[in-house]
Length: 179
Image (cartoon, rainbow, N blue to C red):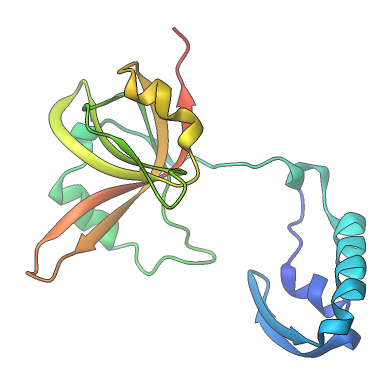
């Protein structure tokens, strides 16, 4: 296991170039004069290069549970709500469902069609689940072909003006299943 470096320490290493800054290990805000930007960038990148661990260079997604769509029920959502509030030290659980397919209505969205608005099913139930996969357009052709794939996601509950709620899957990763 490696020690995670925090963004605050990286910014603190160049504090002499800043007008002000503040934050914590996961987020920081700062202001600096425009003429200090090149030196800030150079020294910040130098600090990161000297302190980053090799394991941190490869994106990693920790999956909390594998589940089928039939397991996403009102009772399950009520149980999930009991773990709120989510944030540092209490991340939203990430689920994985294998063998999902496009219901036939998924589409590209966004200014440059870079995101996918998903409507998915799996073989365990007939319910269609809505999802969004940001910056994942490279997978659209496979998804639209109707071939199965796997997704890793968090479950979001959208509250509507009329008081109703709906479930949306915030897709963190798409994996094309081997045929």
